[in-house]
Structure formats: structure tokens, C-alpha cells
Amino acid sequence: MASTTLEPGLKPAPASGKTFLGHPRGLATLFMSEMWERFSYYGMRALLVLYMTAAVADGGLGMKAAVAAAVYSVYTAMVYLLALPGGWIADRFLGARKTVAVGGVIIMAGHFMLAVPMSVSFFVGLAFIAVGSGLLKANISTMVGHLYDGPNDPRRDGGFTIFYMGINLGAFAAPLVIGTVGQSVNWHLGFALAGIGMALGLTQFLFGTRHLSPQSDVVTSPIPAAEKRAVFRKAGLWLALAVVFYGIVALTGHFTINWAIWPLSIAGIAIPVFVFAKVKRDKDLDQAEQSKMSGYIWFFVAAAVFWMIYDQSGSTLSLFADNNTASTLAGIHFPSTWFQSLNPLYIMALAPVFAWLWVALARRGKNPSTTMKFAFGLLMIGGSFLVMMLAMAAAAGGTKVTPLWLALVYLIQTVGELTLSPVGLSVTTKLAPAKYASQMMGVWFLAVTAGDCVAAIFQLGLGDSVVGSTWYFAVQGVMAILAGVGLAMYRKRVVKLMGDVH
Image (cartoon, rainbow, N blue to C red):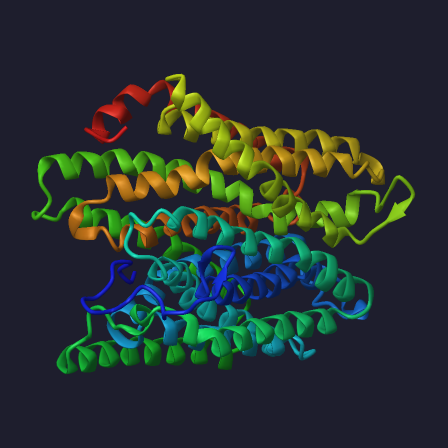
């Protein structure tokens, strides 16, 4: 990904007397752009599985629950997988600002494709959103860093905190607005609202670019002409092979959605394995760096297990909310998509508490190690699915259970997220070898890809009769808890591999 240090002679941001909450004016542009992008993403996500499983007579695609959940898992996996080439494109071709603008246009087009009531347009739209999100997600956070005068600027952490709040504000509002319209009025109108949200974010970004740092326009490692031709030649060859292969499959009448899900799921697991194998074979890394990478693999696998369960909030938990949960609480009726607002609400409420807690424990010398925080996150995410097992049992026989079951599940998952996700970002930067410093954040996102692809394989392999059952939730919950216990038991070995990083 693009460097966050300034090129010689470039200022961190355009000179201006106006600020945004005491921060550079450009933060307002990026805050609003990301808020609207997340509004569009999470609003569409709240509708996705419900639309795919809705009967054709009700305007949906009539898919089986397991297939729809697998499509959702692969889709979210691709969003994070494509962040890697998204960062590379900014570094070598366009620069962060232009890459984000192109990504925003592609995302907006994808949402409006979902608004067209055709299955072909729907799947092409999903592909567009995944590609655009990869371009945007990889670079907009980097542009926040460009606003400040290097990593030691005292305003930097506060700026990222404000930016993070924009993400969660968009994610909180989206299900309440887009989810309600899509579920209660018309699916495609809801998808169109997501497109409008992205259009607002893109407009905000384009009109506010004058407030961004000149560094955001810099191509940090321009690609030579010869290498560019080689890249386009190889990319064109692979694209042509894919078009020919899938064209033959389609023309012979054998194409089903499985022809897309299985290859992408396998690739989402194989690519992280390939990346780590490449790093471990690198002769340029000294013994200490190799040891740290061995320690990092433990955290990566733990994170993949965590995200395998966590990202099912928009698939299996969404279906449980729609099919098995009462839609009334304290006399208030609400659509099932509203449950998707609980996680960002909990994050906004609890993130400051956890930030204070780690500092307070550190002052007393009782701050848990990174390994134990990861282990606790796994115990929480596993426990959330054991609660789901009980909720599913309570819903046996068609009983509509209280919404408090899901409210508890999302609360447990959020607590787990706050002990694992921010810590994972931090340990990634600490354990990264100097040679791969700018690439390791993209490798961290591959944990989400791997976890979601494993979930997709489970969902397709187990089928409709098992996905969403008490057994389904119990097995994954126990798996995560055992992973957490195993990580805690081997924590001394992991700490030893981490060397001077604590």
C-alpha cells in the first residue's frame, strides 16, 4: 500500500485556516466519503442474503439458504482479497486519490446494477462492488495518514479515531434506511438507495479533493513501461483463458453458481498459503524476521477462524433474524434488517471503553499480551455461536424467539472484535519484516478472505438441511473455543517466536 510518509517538498495538506474538529480540513472529505461508502456497502449487505433467498414470486432469486450464504461469504472474501491489488494499483499506476475515485465510480455502478431486476445484472453488480471496494478500501485509510506530518504527528491517532467513527455511523444508519426500504417496499429500490449513497460519497470526495494532501496524488513506485506491458499481457492472457473456459461451460449448459463459488473459495485459501510460503522462502529475511513471521502465522490462523464466524452476521444470522426471530420488542415493530445496526452501535459505545481499559491495565502492569487478547477474541466468537445454538433450539417447531437472543450474540461478537481486530492491526505492523512493511496490512486482510472462503466451503458442502441448524452453530462455536484454548496453551511458544515484540 502507499507510503504514509511525505515526499520531499510536499506539505501534509493544503494550507488552510479552516480545520475539521481541530484536524486538517481534508479529514472532513475522507470522513464523509467513507461514511457514505459504508452506508452503501452495509445497506446492500443487509439485503443481500434476504433477497437471494426470497421467493421469485416475492421479487427475490429463490436460492437455497446454503447457496445464498456461500455466495455472500465468497463476495465478502473477494472484497478483502482485492484490497491487495487495489493497493498495488495505487502504488504503481494511479496514486491513492485517483484509485479511490475510480473505485467509487465502479462501486456506484455496481449498486445500480443490483437495482435492475435481472439475475445477470445482479451478479455482475456484485463483481463490480467487490472490485471497486478493493480499490477504495486499500487506499482511503492511507490518505488519512497523508494529512498529517509523519507518524509522530500528535493529531494522527485522533484523526483515525474520527475516521473510524464515520465508518460506523454509515454502517449503523444503512440497515435502518436501506434495509427498511428494500425489505418493506422493494428490493431493487433498496439497492438503488445504496447506489445513491455511494454517489453522494463520490461527489463529496471529488469536490473535496482540493483539501487533501498532495502526497495522495503521488505514484510512490511508478511501473516501468516494459513491466507495464508484461503485466497487461499476463493479465490479458489469464482473462482470455477465464472467458474461454466459462464460455464453454455456459454454452454447453453446465454452468451453475457453484462454478464460480468453488474456484473463488479455493483461491481465497490458496493465495494466503502462497503468500506466506513466498515470505518464508525469502533469503533476504534474517533469522529474527523469519521467527517473527512464524509467530505471525499463529495470529493469522486465529484471525481467519474468528472472521469465519464473525462475517456470518450478514448471512446465517440474518436468515435467523428473518425466519426465527420476533419482529416486535416492547410494542415496537421493526424489519429484521435492523439487527445489522447492532454491531456498529455496540462498537461506537464500547470502543472508547476498551481504549481506556487497555491503558488503565498497562499502567498497572496487567495489560494482557497480544496472544491472550487473540485467545479471548476466539473464546468470545465461539461463545456467540454456542448462544446461537441455544437460540436455534429455542426456535424449534417454528417458534419466534425474542430479539434479545440476537442482541446478546452481536454484543458478544463485538466484544470479541474489539479484543482481536485492532490488536491484529497493531501486531501486523510490529511483526512485519522491513522488506514487506507496506504489504503486510494487505496480508492481514487475507485472514478475512481465508475465513470467509472456509465458511463458503462449509456452507456449500453441508447443504441446506444443516446450514443454520443447532449442529451447525455448535460445531463452529466449539471449533473457535478450542482454537482459543490452544492459542492460550501455546502462548509461551508464540511469544518466543515474536522475539523483541511484546
